[in-house]
Each structure stands twice: as structure tokens, then as C-alpha cells.
Image (cartoon, rainbow, N blue to C red):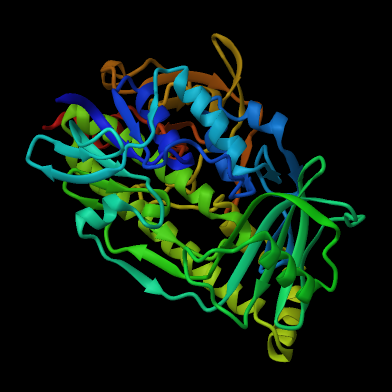
Length: 493
């Protein structure tokens, strides 16, 4: 029987990101997918600022920036949100099909030795105190593999979630959205989004040169999940709502979705975990789903590594306690966006009021930072305003020359960043973190949702780019206590 450290079910963005995280940290990983091969379907259409930061932390962003195109405007229920003044190196959304994101992530994971086994559905498993024995089906018959952990990144119909007996509770669909990626003989002069008419709305956005995504949403019908939708059906529905078909032809992908919102009751069943759409599905408003899954992967990856290397199993419980509330908030805001998208004069009046409110900076920032996930805050037990928030990508000067904070995170290890000139403490040399002494010309750091804060004297940055601890008054005792608290979960077993 083959053995490995972690088996990941699902070769989408979440699974590929997790696989690469684990390989960077030196773990053995196998990625399984039930499909016979990659479909090439475009699916999600872009990534937001926080996901771009996460990818930049691992050196994975440049290739995607070259293939996509930035748009400084997002939306809340098709009401525009200007991202251009957000305190990030990437104050825009990047329009890029999921198929290109998957291709880039798979290529970069392959550089580290990750391969995807296609036609390999997970059909069963049993676990004990030391690992999981996984049954794998497919056209070549049943075989088995043993791993320390199994992670289901296998989508909204997750086989892993069902096998684990984890409930997927929530609300049923009340509408249907239809998508087609096509060429247009009569393309619009400018992209348009969420034009409301009759019982629905419609959009046309250019994904790549000559290639458009058309969307029509209908609130007067519900298609069952998995029901067939032909290109002729799509064209008829789009034409009925939009009044024209724009000369659509040569469809590359036709699909449909609803506003069903479901959330796994738990993210962990012993040595089995869920991430991405296997843990949460929702109406695709604001393009949050792919982003949510990639960030799940980066939160879980370093914790799995700590559990495997240092027997820090208790640390794995923080994956659910940190990420489940984030997903719950996404389900909440997408339900609100569904309500704001419904047809009729009552919703029209509400949208007019919301449109006025969104012109206020406080409202625009509150909604936009939620959509982009720049405002996420985890409870780390430290009361510094930076603690629990993503660390800003500040320019630094170190003994090795100029760098950025995100570049320090390329090895996926915790970093103790110090702006003082005292000697390291003994705890800093234990191999569990990297200590960097640096200078920063910025006396204040802008933190989304908080404002400008004085540059800390020292901060401890987690591998996923969130600040575990920070201080403006560095003392040897205070630093030693912070490091003991950080190291306790991975050194006391």
C-alpha cells in the first residue's frame, strides 16, 4: 500500500494551493481528482486583493498578473465599489479565468514534485489514531493509500464530506443564473454589469481578447443543480431579458448556478478536513468563492505541517475556529446580495438608497474590505491593533539588501521581524522561526479597516501572513513570553 503525508481530494485552486504549501514545507502529498482530466472550463472569473497578497507571499502572483487584467471596480449586488484607494499593493480585482489560475498553480506545484492523479475518486476511508486508509476508485479498479491526513477540496458535492458524515446545512436556491463564455459579432462598446430588466438582469464582460462572459440571472425560475443547459437555452434566456443576443457564437462553456448557501457543520472529523467549496457554497456574488478556498488552504497548510513535524495536533483545531466564521460571513453577505438583486419596485428603491450610501467612504470601505477579505481579523490573544490582521507588504532594508515583508514569507515559515538593534533572545534560535532585523522608512503603516498605526518595534508573522503578536514597547521579557506562547503548541508534546 502506498503511503504519504497528506492526501488531497480535488485538483481545483484550493487543492493545488494546499498541495504546494505542503511541498514547500517538505511534506509528501498526493492530489486525487475524480475527473478523467482537467476540463479547461473557465468557471470563476478573477481574484481579489487579499488572494493576490497570499499568492505574492509564495512568489506565485507574477505569472497571473501577466495573464489577467486589473479592474479597480468591484461590486456589491452589481452596485459598483471603487477599490482604488485600499491600503494594499493590489488595489484592484484581477480578471482572469479559473482555468488559467489552475494551470498556473498546477505548473508551479509540479515544479516541487506534485502530480495530480486523474480518474481517482475517493470512494471510502477508515481512520485510526495514526492515520487514514483511503479507498480510491476509478476505471483501473479499487486501490488503497495510507496518509496521516485526508483533506477534501472536492467541491460542493464533496465525496469526502459525505463519507465523513458532516452535515451541509443552509438554504435552497431561489433563482437561477446562467453563464456562457462566447465570441460576439456585436460586442458592447463598454462592459456592462447587472443591467436590470423584467424578471432578471444581464451582464457582458470581456475575459480575454475576443472572448466574453455573458450572464443572465432570472428570479422567476429555478433550475435543479446538475440540470442540462444548452447554448440555445442560454441564448433564448439572455435574449428574452436583454433584448438582443449580441451575435453570440462559438461557446466555450455554458453552465448555470443558483443562490443555494450551505455550510459544513464542522471542518474536521478526526484526521479528515474540508476546505474550499467542500466546506461552503454560496451565490457567486462579488467573486468570493475561489478566493475563500485559496485562503482556507494557506491557513490549513502550515498547521498540518506543524502537526506532522511537531505533533501539534491541537493547533489544527484553530483551522475551523478561524476559517469557519470567515465563510459564514461570506454566506451572509451573498444572501444579502441576492436580496438586493431581486426584481421589482421595492428592490429598486432599496438599491437606490444603497447606491447613495456606497458613495460614502466608510460604507464603501466596509463593504469592499469584506468582499476583498482585507479586513479579516483572527483572535491571537494579543491586543496590539496589528495582531490577528494580515501584515502589510512594507518595503524593508535588511543586512541582505532591500526586500518586502511578503518576500520574507516565501519559505512559508513564521518570521520574527524586529526593528530594534538588540541581540536575539535564545528562543529565536530554536529552528521554529526566522528572525529578521530590518529598517523601514515608513513610520506608520496603513491597516485596512483600522487606519494608520505606528510601526511596531517587533512583530511575529505567521506563515499565512497574519500577525500573531506585535509590540511598540519591546522588552526582553515581553519578547520571550510572546515566543513561548507561540512555540507552546509545537514544542510541548
